[in-house]
Length: 116
Image (tube, rainbow, N blue to C red; front, side, top):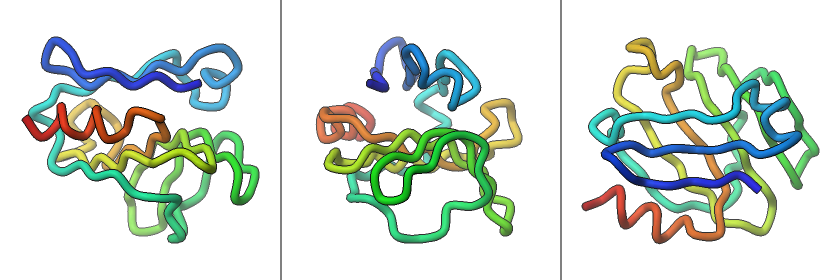
């Protein structure tokens, strides 16, 4: 299961085992000051973009997505878990993404830590 933590002024997402193959990385970390907004949502219904990774419709999405409008997303969503939607400032400045969509059982706790 994807692990999300907030510490040392960074949000860190760790992809264990086979998930790292689909995500194309072991982890992804961004400084807290790069986070523009965050919220806890349900499974999004909008088109996320063209993907590289795993997509089992309505159950699991894991990988990188690029929308035709240029939005780049790192996605690790699992049905039945809350989704933490994090919008970043400028993805071109080295973090590589404009938005993170991560399912985690502790989404409310992580979101509260990001609001502080």
